[in-house]
Length: 204
Image (cartoon, rainbow, N blue to C red; front, side):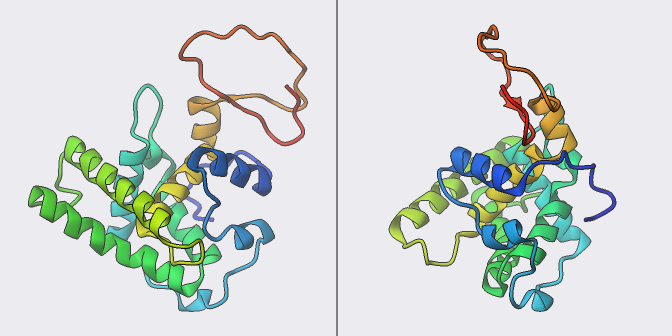
């Protein structure tokens, strides 16, 4: 793992994927390699990512999970996380889609705003990613599960996975419940309360 990344909260891999699937309504691309801790076949041929690529991925992640009263995805160096997981868990075809998507994002940004994604305003970035999200959902609906994934699906999945399994995501965006925890069947709820992050083995 990139030493610059914030220390992740320990979460069972299967639990992390199950929670991600609930949010997205689909399974994570590369899940089999993520669960087994093994590299995808052909990983050694993965595309090379530049510092500019990582900066663009940080910006995409920050647009998906922006800073509000809690830090956003850029604070957990989401670009480095996405590159690491793509290299470890994606097949060569998926890695190429992931890498080529960066060019596609800038092309779409220029078509919409006349600027690159990084030069666009926060509002323009959000509008663009909403369009790409709708495009990715339509693509998934019109294609079989065996079809290559849409590049934006990869960015969205890895942003959510990386953010909510990071220290910031688990303890500030969520409420962290330490192991072993205790059973509380009637905790008061106030509108707007954050969901709980519960490590494996804790009980609610």
